[in-house]
Each structure stands twice: as structure tokens, then as C-alpha cells.
Image (tube, one colour):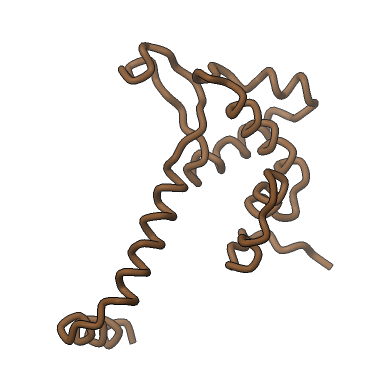
Length: 138
């Protein structure tokens, strides 16, 4: 039986998260190598107080292939869990490297807030607009 490769963010699954292994299993389903690499990246960045210049030390220290590391790092960046800071960013005083990002958590909070506001908004104008938009879609 094949393992699904799509990220599964069902509310019941997310509500049962206990640690980083649950997060990486959800973000990288069916790929143990990328799960391992993601956990190592996230833990290394969490332990560092300043941006980490390179993640290549994780490749050698934990036996992770360069390709796996690059693919994992790229996906974590696209998801907004990590980001690369350049030396031009004045917030970090000329330092550059990888750090944990708040983009994903901020985006998910905004989405949750928007859904709550939309659900509570029962103005007639809003209801008409929603009905018109649904009509355009179908």
C-alpha cells in the first residue's frame, strides 16, 4: 500500500500534535529522510540565538544527503517555517543565515481570524455578495 504524500492538516490530526515529530511527519508524509532532515534543521535553528550561516554541518554530522537537505530546506522555506536573512537586513546587524520564521504561524492565524469573521458576518449585503460570488464560480 502506498503512503499518501499530501500534507494532511485535518483539524483532528493537528489537535493531536505533541512534539516536533508529529509536525515533520505531517509536513513530509511518507519520506523518513526528509522528516529526519526537517527535524534536524528546525532543532538546530531553535537552539541558535542568531542566524545559522550554513546548514551543511548537519549533513556531515547526521549523515543527511545534500539533495535531501536542500529539498527539505526549500519546502520549509516555502511553508514559511524558516527563512534566509541576508546581510543587508538591518534587524540582524549585518548577519546572514537561516533562522526560524513566524510567517507560517502568522498566515494561519490570519486565515483563522478571517474564517471566524466571515462566519459571524451575517449582514444582508455580505450574504448577497457571497451568493453572487458563488454564482460566478458555478
